[in-house]
Length: 217
Ligand code: C5P
Image (cartoon, rainbow, N blue to C red; front, side):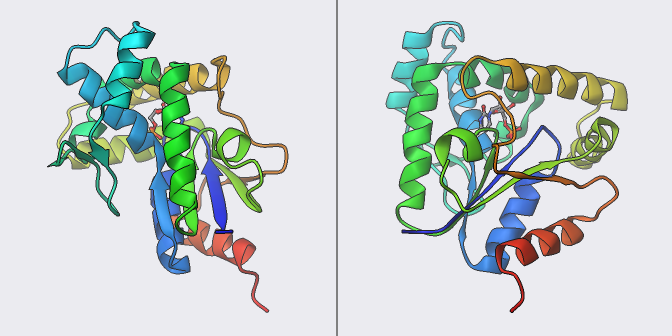
């Protein structure tokens, strides 16, 4: 049995960065499940798939040529790591996240990763649905203002023109949808530990999680 650490939480909580660094420190694989939903979304936008047509989305996900080597997302061999972070993809991702058939495929994919290696995995449903037996589950969050500030800094750094108000409004809409959807809603697993990272640096969060996963003997 390989080991699994799950990190779930709302948008902009720093889950991906924390999960990636924690995986590096542990020497485990990092699984960015948001990137999987984003790659399907990007493919759907490029192919102009009807985002409300569940059968069409299922066909698209079934035939998808995607791969996730460490730190990258590939779509038909093309590195789409940047493209999947576009605001248009972020906004449209809810259609993909709401599609049961697509979720089923992505969940199977996620479990397959954990059959081949120890993983630190991040998303919305990792502790609740995908890995209910994981021994270490965290729900990483921060105040919505802090999360929006972090996201704004990221977007400005990559040259997007946006404002705090727009980022905050998008984030609130996405969190509300993620938390209220019928399938796999975002919520802490009953046995997850909530980590409020407000005011903490990424390194502090990673150190804290590392101590919890591998307590110093
Ligand atoms: O985490 P990230 O912002 O990359 O996720 C993009 C979207 O994918 C989320 O807003 C959510 O709707 C969906 N998602 C999900 N389940 C996951 C990971 C992401 O529904 N495990």
